[in-house]
Image (tube, rainbow, N blue to C red; front, side, top):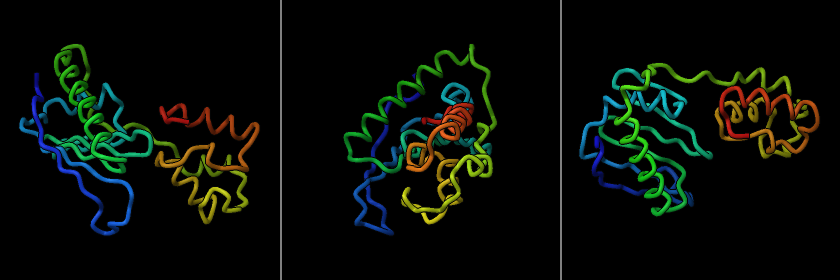
Length: 174
C-alpha cells in the first residue's frame, strides 16, 4: 500500500467567501510521486505536469489534482463529498500502484477538444439562453469540461449528435 493516511483541509474560496461550494486539500503522509504517471495512464488525466509530477482529472465539473504530497479538489458540496472522493482516489492510487508492472506509464496530457470545432457545431446565435454572453464563451467552457451539449437549449438534431460524438472521442461526459 502506497497511500495510507492523509489530513484534510476544507475551506471556502477566500476571494469569494459567499460561494456555496467548498474546496479540499488532502495533505498526504506519504510521497506518492512515483504512482502519478501510472495513475495518469489508468484514469486518463486531463492535464499532466512533469516537473514536479502532478496530474489533473476533471470529474462532474470539479478538478482533482494529485501531487506527490497532496491532493486538491475544488467545487465540493461539503466535507462528506470530499471524504468520499478522497477514499475513492486512495483506493485507485493503491490499486494502480499494486498493478504498476502491468501498466505503461503516461507522461502526457490527454488530447483536448478544440474550441473552434465545438463552435462550428453550435447555432452561433449568442442568444444567452445557456447563461453565457456568446457561443464562443460557451464553446470554451465545453472544451474545458465545465459545460456540455445539453446546456445549449438551441443545440438540437444533427449538430447535437455530432457534438456528442466529437466530445466522446475525448472521454468527456456528455
